[in-house]
Image (cartoon, rainbow, N blue to C red; front, side, top):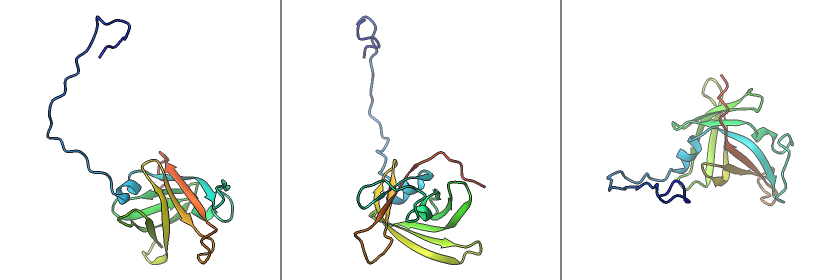
Length: 152
């Protein structure tokens, strides 16, 4: 390798040797979701149009989400006010996410299952339907990694 392509008198030899280091296994869908805090950064309707995050159809799904590898989560609104807490799972195939929201006493408030449309280290998007009986109208809730510290 030449550090300066125009001067071939200076060069570095790069030496590689065999290693027993295993190739890292790909992350499971659950590990991907738990790998970073997430922030809602967009919502898109079934027509492909961006939807304001304060729109009544999506505002309840907007905020910061912290999914712990132990299967617990906590969510906050964008103003850092508490939103919900509880338990979560992602199906082994990465196609659905389930949250079980709980109150401070650990009692279940509701369970929500959503279809995941994108789950990578760079994006987590799930789909919601205002009317479960009509799958032609939906909103995709888009999250991206954030370094936003979890509020106390």
